Length: 203
Image (cartoon, rainbow, N blue to C red):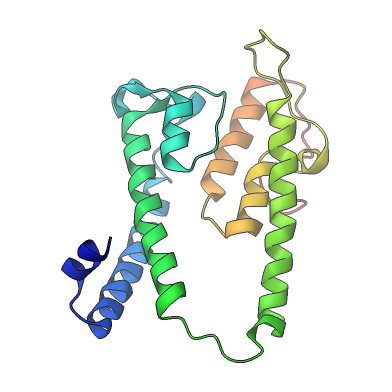
């Protein structure tokens, strides 16, 4: 690992410059990604066409990408590769900066920003875990049909798990939640019309 880092930079100043460039590049890519998603569906699960490459077994794909294990449909190869690259890219960027170059002033743990951020993370974590628990238990063994999730934040939004992720990681997944909401409305005639897509009572 040290050898790889030395090839990226020969000094701390140069590495900070590299980290800055990687951060700006990620912001540009995030903007381009948001624009692209206005015209293209997210290529995964029920929305994955064959044009995105051969399917990768979902347990292997998620194990390599982020380690959790799932029981969903196969992941398109391109989506798998992009997710893997992002995890490596973002992992290096976050871990290296926070462990070597971030400034932690005295009392930062008791600063209101840290406390509020920690509470938001905990709230998002609880919502995300509970919502995923509901989704994992929608089907009985042997069932393959789609069902309407109920309970928890699903009483208010279609993408309750995505709502939790926004609080948890502030991830730009609004489009994914909106796509899920439209799919539910199309798939189920008795779908609750008062549910919003992602943010309760708002969106």
